[in-house]
Amino acid sequence: VKSRETNNAALELLDVAAQRIERFYSGSLLQERHAMHLASASRQGRTKDAPDVDLTYRKQGGASTQILMLFNRIKADLQKQMATLESEDKVGQAEYENIVENSNKKKTIGNENLGSKQAAKAELQVTLQRSRDELRSDKQALLAVEEEIQGLHAECDFLLKILAQRIQEAGDCGCEILTAEL
Image (cartoon, rainbow, N blue to C red; front, side):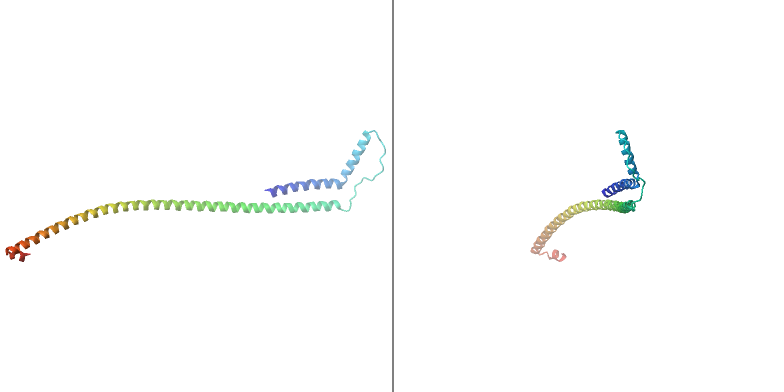
């Protein structure tokens, strides 16, 4: 931006300088000065005759055209530089817009992926909680079954103990029929 402003200011300055140089070398400035000098002299009351001077314009070896050509070259260089800056700005703007568009696409895709991942995570958390609840109830059922088994085991031990006592008592009585049946 600063380069563009500087180049525009330089172009304006070159235009002003070229106009002044043209006026200087065209002879009109010299004629204007002579006319002003005559006007001021007549106002002061002096009416001396001015010396005879040839005030016609003569080209002085092309100095003005060389200077103006130099100014035109400088202006052309500045205009090229401004055109280059303008094209670079357009390319840069296009690249910036492309980057912004790509980042927005990536952001949209990322948000969609994030949403689907969050939904999957929530679903997995629900499944995990159900599994934990089922595990807890299964553990309670297992404890109940184990208690039942221990109770049955104790009953079986008691019954076996009673049976062993009866067998022993029956053996003492001479009732071998009872032992044969077992």
